[in-house]
Amino acid sequence: MEKKKMIKIAVVVLIIIGIASAFIWLDYIPIERGSCGDNLKWSINSKGYVTVSGTGELKDTGETNRWWKQDIEATSLKIKEGITAIGDNAFDSWESLESIKLPSTLKSIGRQAFSKCKKLKHIDIPEGVEYIGEYAFEDCISLQDIKIPKSVTKMQRNTFEGCLLLLPVNVDEMNDSFASKGGLLYNKDMTALISCPYLFIEVDIPEGVKQIQDEAFLGNSLLEKVKLPEGLTSIGSSAFENCGFLSSINIPSSVNDIGERAFNKCDKLTKIKIPEGITEIKAYTFAECSDLTEIVLPSSLLKINLCAFTGSSITSIFIPEKVWMVSSSAFYDCQLFSDIMVADNNMVLMSQDGVLYDKKMTELKICPYGKTGTFVIPDGVKKIGEEAFGPNLSRLEIPRSVDEISEFAFFGVSEATDFVVAVYKGSQAEEYFKNHKYSNSDNIKYEIIQE
Image (cartoon, rainbow, N blue to C red):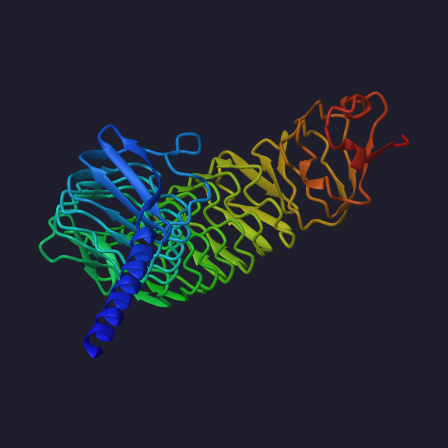
């Protein structure tokens, strides 16, 4: 009797285990599946586990070419052996993805392949991967560590842009293309700095580095101090853009090229001395450096380009003798800027009362934003250039000699509340305002000078 009771209990237990196992097994049955390449299939179960299997390349994905639903909630991804490439945008914005398993057969990871996988903390890139595309792990804000295997020969810039928690990047010592030192990523011979993780506050770049590549420190909001080595020759485009706490930087005398937007939005920079050898301040190089009050330009300088110093707090600047071009927007929105000085032996430009003209004083180029009150354009000036005036003037008098006013000459005064332009009756300036040629001239009142 006791034996029969035990058998019944055992049967019940087995039934319960069987039912429980069935439910567990059901959890892993795919609830959706499809194709993601010529010879590739994918599936997802109720737990959010995604499996990709087959051979060959996982196809590129875009907004209109996705093989998965927009609202997919994958938590785990396993790419099986046999798959050789992950296409561009393949898993872009899989915000619930927490873990990834990549196959040993993998050779390349495409552009933005895992961009915005915001819960991803760790990833092992297998030996055999040769190429990692631009922005491949962009904005993976939880990613904490990554190791670059020796097989990687090409890795695009900004691979880890926006990875705010990424600790020092490690590169296999046997890698023939890249190296890491102090957590920063360099090329193999340590002559070019490629990128710096976001958590660094101070950086001392070693001797021997010749280049800081494009966007190397882009968006590092914690960075306060950088020591650049003598022998450095170039600073790439956007190299330090948006480094909001970078308060000072000494650019070595060996630097002969600084890229566009290199120090754009470095709010805490107060002083910049640009070394001899630099011939051009490129577009937006020091734009929106709101605390910047002092700029020293080199005698080698030839050009100051579009919005080079826009939005800074400088009050004056000295233009060296070789400069032949200053963009009309170079000092746009510099509200305290009131005095432009030009070297006497400059053959192309000159200044009078802090205003920039061509050498013959036939074209008014820049009347600084900080100029206030009434400004009378000297007789003999024939042309008013683009974006010539700021919003702080209250009155402008234009002589009869002016016969050309550029289309956007008054662009900078579009926000002025009380700006009056005085012109002579029958002059070209009167015709300009009569015909309403400037798109924002409703903000400008004009009156006739009584002779």
